[in-house]
Image (cartoon, rainbow, N blue to C red):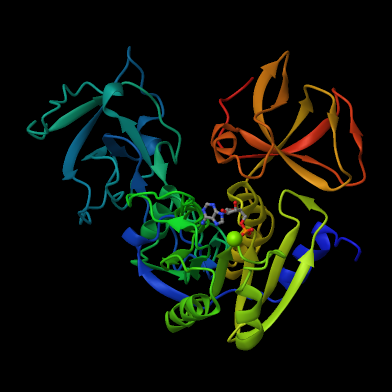
Length: 419
Ligand code: AMP
Ligand code: MG
């Protein structure tokens, strides 16, 4: 019996072959969730000009140095400055300009007095006539409620680093420095092949001995979640002819990656290997992992190929362990995968010495997360995976795993906030 390969070594070998895909500019409206391909530096100061942070009056601080409720300072109102308009006045001694939030500061002004600190009865509908004078009730230091140029971002500063997955606020930042598009890594095109004579597409009638193809759509969903573009091919029967035709169709779509499920174990009908040997190069790895020991990896016509097991749970686990990091690398991400927490195992377990990914429910217990294995941990039992909060990772080399052990759990859903 050949020795089982270490999971991390296998991941390292896979990643070695993956380089980030080229980037495309996309309009900001399409940039959400995409991976930024280039560092973004500000082309100019933000804000670009000194402006008011408040609705009120632009003043010369020295004029209002002794202003108070008891002894207001009366200033002459010489201008009205709405946002978006460059003022053409210069404040002289004893003068003020009514100003709105975001409006440019007039020359000569160095501070803002908020309207509520003046005697002006401001109409909230913006219709108030400009008064001739205003009484200031409070002293203001120079710079008070003034947004200085470059206060948020200096020209040339790094605003967003490549490799970040763009969120709404990141897209907003790009817009705030005048970008209409973002250079993002192209989404990996991932062809998905399901093989098995027993497979019927959901929605079709099921005959004796047949099962619905759940791997196909699940893999498509996983690929989409991981930032790729799935190309789902119709399921192939377990014949060399059918599987060969399916791979030819997949290659015609010019994918960046091909994933197949089933047909790579040692069953007599496992024809995927036969087909790949003709089209490219295949290694059949026995990985020290449960579920998902047999993993085929290679290239088909120059395209990286993952031959995942057939059992749905093994499909998802091997996708998470091997395929997601590869897609992350293609996208230019650092590739941490789904978040990981540490939890306490609720019960004694027997293990078989392989690295195991257990479906667990997570419960809160006196400030700790407790992981309770669910279902029979069979690799065919997809429902338990759907009910799981995460996959607890039991390291290799263990036969007896006592309750109370603390192990990492890769989260399959977000957890409620805890204190
Ligand atoms: P195999 O790798 O062909 O030996 O398949 C292992 C198990 O996974 C068998 O019980 C198959 O019926 C099942 N299986 C294979 N492909 C799929 C699929 N696309 N959807 C659901 N189950 C599958
Ligand atoms: Mg089969």
